[in-house]
Picture 1 (cartoon, rainbow, N blue to C red):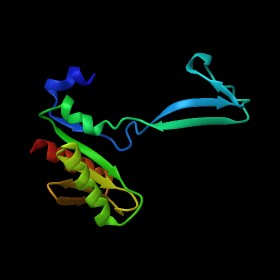
Picture 2 (spheres, rainbow, N blue to C red; picture 1 turned 90 degrees about the horizontal axis):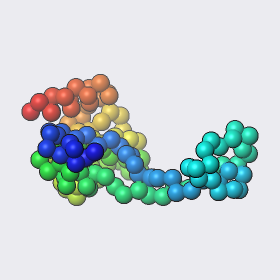
Picture 3 (cartoon, rainbow, N blue to C red; picture 1 turned 180 degrees about the vertical axis):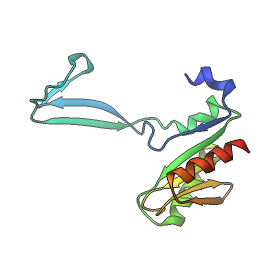
Picture 4 (spheres, one colour; picture 1 turned 90 degrees about the vertical axis):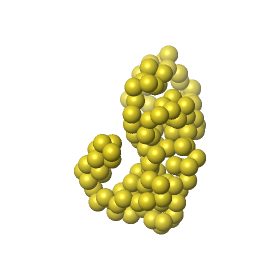
Amino acid sequence: LFQQCKGDTDVVFNAAALSDFTVSSVEADGVPTSKATGKISSATKSLIVRLTAAQKLLPLMRTFFPVAKIVGWKFEVNGVRQAAISRGNQQILSCHSAACVVNGPAYGEGFGFLEADHVHHVDSKQALAAFCADWVKK
């Protein structure tokens, strides 16, 4: 899919937690299941789902979209606003992206749109969407 879009993409917004984990195994009542077994019965008493870390997609985006403006996302739980902003800036540098949206309990209310060490604060999802639309037009 990425290969098909490669030349026609101006902007890529990579959503938070996109594919951070993948299901590695499932056990229903202690019995391993597979995709081939189909539906898990609603009579199942115990269900264990094991997740493993998936390959991060954001660091690969520049390969697929060499000239696009790429925007990552950083949802931060621990720390304070400045630490969340710092981690967003680290993401921009390590992933060669143009910007990063930062939010979560560490950031506090609203969203920070980071680019080139500058933070544009917006108070709501609607304001973020409007800001992003204007940013894309630049």
